[in-house]
Image (cartoon, rainbow, N blue to C red; front, top):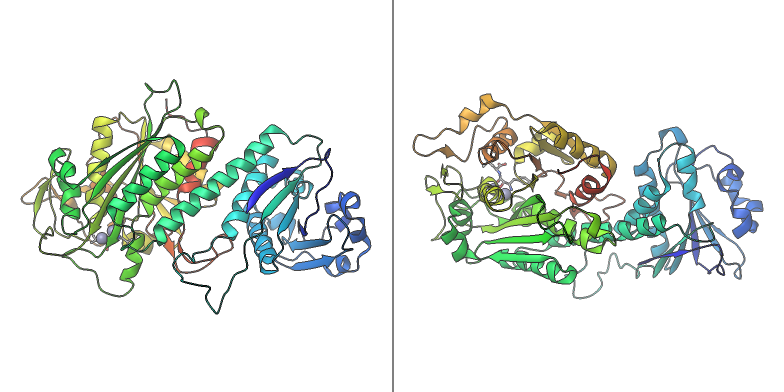
Amino acid sequence: MDIEEQNASGKARAVDCAILPLFEKIPFKDQASFLSGHAPWVLTNPALRDFSGKKDEQALIHGNGDEPWPRLLLWGLGKEDKCALADLRNAVAGAVKFCRDRSFSTLGLPVEGLDMFVRKGLATDRDILLREAVVAALLGLCRNDFYRSGPSEDEELPADPERLIFIFAEKEVPEKSSLALRLGAGEAKGVLTARRLGNTPANLLPPAALAGEARRIAENYSFSCRIFDEEQIRDMGMGALYAVGRGSRNGPRLALIEHCPKGKENTAPLVIAGKGITFDSGGISLKPPANMHEMKSDMGGAAAVLGLFTAVGEAPDRERLPRIIGIIAAAENMPGGNAGRPGDIVTTYSGKTVEILNTDAEGRLVLCDALAYAQKELNPAALIDLATLTGACVIALGDYGSGLFSADEALRAAVLEAAGQSGDLVWPMPLWDEYDKNLKSELADMVNIGPREGGAIHAALFLRRFIEKRTRWAHLDIAGPGCVTKSAPLLPVPGATGVGVRLLCRLLRDTGFTLH
Ligand code: BES
Ligand code: ZN
Ligand code: ZN
């Protein structure tokens, strides 16, 4: 679906259906007086009197066929004082899907209908609403039917609408508003990229293919990209990443992708590292069979990195962003004749040695080499990693919560602020020194697992052992929200969510966070 805009000076384009989100208990004339210009017929329509505006109440009103807006879809937002940005997102996503179900092809969204959110103090800025409406509309149409040979019998979806036109009342669409619409489309594309990768089965997305996606995105958007293969990983001394990847016929990869605006070549970059386990069987410490297939999404951190670069690549103002480097540590964690074993001791890229007691704690192993590489080679102004790291984090924070671990107050506050804006549930978790001794090894510098209790903290503390004192670092454990089993308005098909993409976009653009 294309996102288009229309100003008030040109001839009004006909739409199949105009979408109008409305609060409960506020007289229609106060919320939508502007309709008298576009669709005066609606004001006398008895359907209006029947519509209360309760949350998710819907009414499709038909007017005359030769009107520019022959149909109006009213969508209830519920009470104004209980309404938040998420409710607007859900309403837009629901309304667009409603229109798809009826095969409407050109949709309209009167921007004046969004202005009341600003007037009522629910948002500070109309351009935020525009961006979020685009994101919601595009994510609401998300489907996952790449792998069917034909339409499925039970849920044959009509084609997506061709376009959603944002209808402005201004003679000229403000430049900032145009930008907001394009940013929204780019961010949605980033999230959809991350979801597609997360949902791709492991036989179709081995580590080399995941790294190949980084290359493809880099070529598409003129980023630079570098990929190390299995042999190079071993020879460079990334013993931990190598140990995880060696059990699979599909060898590990380390992919680097960089956005460097002109003139920023000598600035310290923001580095984002992602866990890219294309399948986590547990290795020799094999997982139980139930739901093991979900471990095809154990590359949600890497997917978020690639989603972010997609969004950055799509952004018309990308040159204004800081220098950003993504690192993807990709491996397939498999048992086999060449697999690493419990008890193996490996030397990591940092030089520190690790006694691998459980091959299923592989995320921290691939990440520790990526983090050490970043600090040794990339001079990060800040280093953030995202990883579907521990089941313990899901126990602690539930299916939708991400754990945030960081000793850097400013960075931590910025990530929490970004999460508030993107609508992600992120909660600060501790990095207690007292627990670090649980990682002591009799033989090597450390073991790769701690006690089950506080498992997410022990994993984070393991990573912290590879963080130098001067490095600003934050770790996001996204094991819960990386992949979910329930659908939602912005996630019509359960599975990989693309969590992290929008959060990182907000962090880059809309928090006070600065790198230097
Ligand atoms: N990929 C898993 C963590 C995970 C669990 C992600 C559930 C998404 C949903 C990770 O590699 C893992 O297996 N962690 C182990 C660590 C343990 C062996 C110390 C875990 O959480 O059980
Ligand atoms: Zn594992
Ligand atoms: Zn894993």
